[in-house]
Each structure stands twice: as C-alpha cells, then as structure tokens.
Length: 124
Image (tube, rainbow, N blue to C red; front, side, top):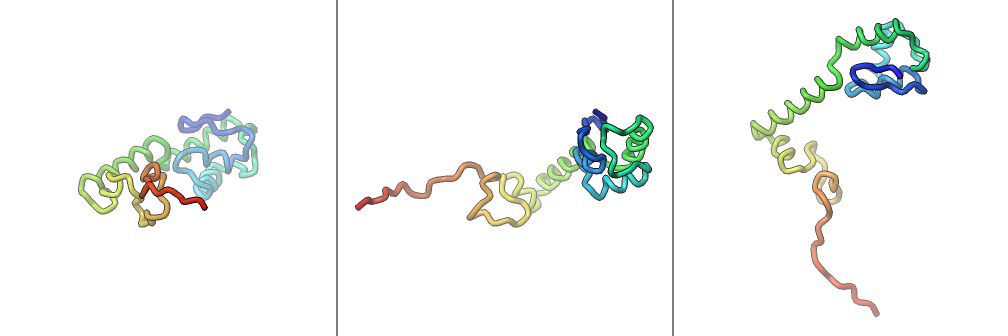
C-alpha cells in the first residue's frame, strides 16, 4: 500500500481514483498530477514502482493538500467568525452557511428536531 502525504492510497483501485483519497485532490487535479509525473492513468496503485511514487510525490509538493489545506480552511472560517461576517455568524450558530433553507431540512447542522406542539391524535 503506497503512502502519499500521510494517506494510504488503496491498492485495488486505478491511480487516478486512488489519489482522490487525499484531501484536496479531486479527479481533475489527480489527472494533472499524473500527467506531470508521466504515470499511466489506468495503472493500478499496487503496480506503481518506487520511481513513479517518488515522481507523484514531487509533483504533489506544488499543491496544498491534507493538513496544510485543512488548517487553511479552518483559519478562513475562524477569520470570518472573528470579523462577524454573515457566514461567520452562521458558523457560530451552527446553521447552514451558503443560503440553504432551514425551515424544511438542515437537521445535520441544527440538531435533533423539536416538537412544535404536543397534540394528541383523536381516533374515531
């Protein structure tokens, strides 16, 4: 199992897909990295040679991924919360940040549903 940027990439998948297991790398960036490293897209991760893994690591050094990217995103959120921007206040309250509706869904951010009224159903 190859280890890149502190992440074990799965052996049984194509390299193009396996690289997307690293935070901050999607399909398009994965393709760009493999093209720059001159590695075949369709090759399985288990079939990579040490030279190819080294080439991939060298190319990935140019991009912000994993811990650095997570830290940068968290710092951006904290900055928004400190300056009391609209998005920052939504983050503080645990509500959806990007304009989603809250009266119908958004349970993942708001928590467990609240009972509006304790009404009994009358059976006939």
